[in-house]
Image 1 (cartoon, rainbow, N blue to C red):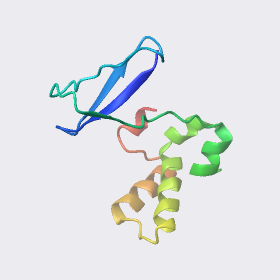
Image 2: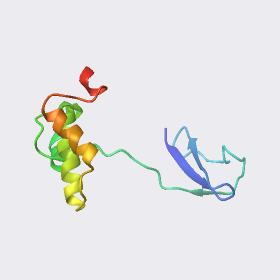
Image 3: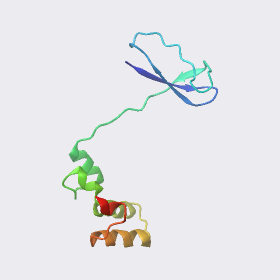
Length: 112
């Protein structure tokens, strides 16, 4: 079942229209304001990545994707990003990352 998306020329909002088949005639109206003045929009799509692609993009330190739940890994990622952008890591963030490396996790993370 195809899903087509349209931008409303009147209110500017996006409307999704489900059809039974690609050959079915589509008579869409805006689900927000009821206008028939719609323009076909390019739909977003999902892009699946392999573990290798994720690790390449976010850093090669973790051995599994579950390790990204570990605050220490998040800290490494944050350090890399701040370094890439030429920015100094805020003092509070530096303290939290250092504490996590010592085993002292922020309260929501210590339940993991």
